[in-house]
Length: 171
Image (cartoon, rainbow, N blue to C red):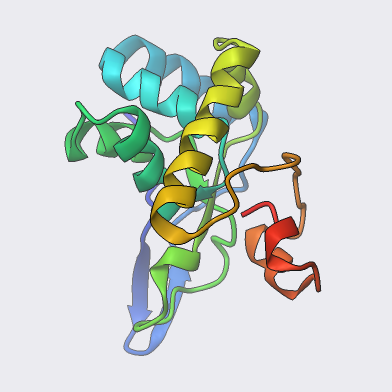
């Protein structure tokens, strides 16, 4: 059994290196997806399908699980995170002790997000955003309506420096 480790290993004191020994590829993504679909619980599969609709940062993943999969726990989340389908985007950069781990961006291996999205309807995709938007509006004074769903290839936190007014930022 192969898995992708999300943590780092120590080379020597004060020097870290990523534990991902390969570049993410579609072949690895397909193999991890097939293995996950054969072995995962139905709850973990449902969580993974929801995660295919969101940017993969731990706080957003936890919020999605809380809002859409309240009957699940840490073990189902761990099934998804340790499935081998998800990796840390900047896996070549060491995690600095004391850094804010909520800003670490994850992604699905190539091809996995599309395979998961193929298994859900567009109604389900939009419901993920509706539920998260309503939660953020009621708990964090977030605008009650998101005007568009945009992909930002520079990452989620690039929007913070974009100069857009807060009510026009996607997240």
